[in-house]
Image (cartoon, rainbow, N blue to C red; front, side):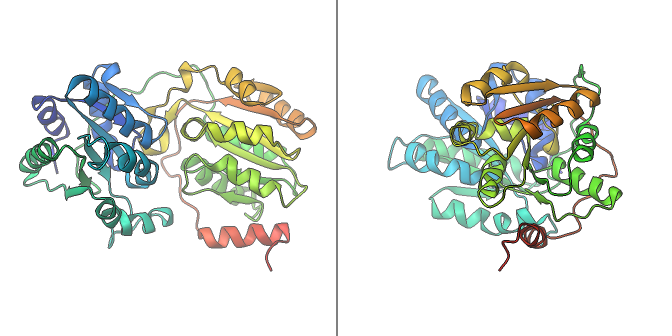
Length: 372
């Protein structure tokens, strides 16, 4: 195991001092260390991984120095465009260090959404011409030296791939939240307020896990739910697509990190808003499922943004009573968004869905009558 602070300090000692990216559970300790020890303007938690590549490119252009992009391997897809059309040595030839968490590593058990990404993590880098090393705790200092020498000499990105459990624990104090409800508290109110024909499309991470377990406790079954286990940022687009094939209300339960990641999609959705799409953001101002690193939602005027994107009205809530009342309003009003402010936190014994994604899809398609 690598001492997390020593790894961070070795980057700083080599004048690698600008960080940008989207947090990852495998990099949670490293991300915590970076946040704790780096000036806020030198550690930017970005909307998506492509933004981080672009920021590090701009940083190099203006300073001649080098940035670090941290991400889960699922974020490679978001990063491919700027890696190829901006940083590649056939275009602007911009050096930077990529630190990528290897979810779904072949031979290691992981959740279904990570299996395919794990298989192609290295070959995807190879196909776009990015050299890499899989981080080894015994020689990681030499690997850092190699990475830095490589991207300086070749003026192109280089990647370090991080396996599970590679970094030592690095604890930081949790920030106090002014809100009393947890996300699961709010989800219970929402689900209790819905009828047997209401369809739920929920965002990736703990939101979908909690919905699955609430349904289990209530013995309601899962045929009304699409639990988006991957594809972060695309929940609203999935819900929009589902609306095209049903007259039932489709409740999109999004998270602040997911909303921010591909915010532009909400503008397109609002411009083509189906009457049966009901949009909810559960905002705890954090990427909680991958370690609790903050999003920028607490610094944004989300109601104004949603209205600017085309929603007619926005309801902001933070109590059970307010949520229940707002859900009733959304049932009968079109193009109204609901924001629920919650605090971080989930049960230690929170499980994962015991059905597969394919079973989840098939059950919902049967419910909708679309399975031929």
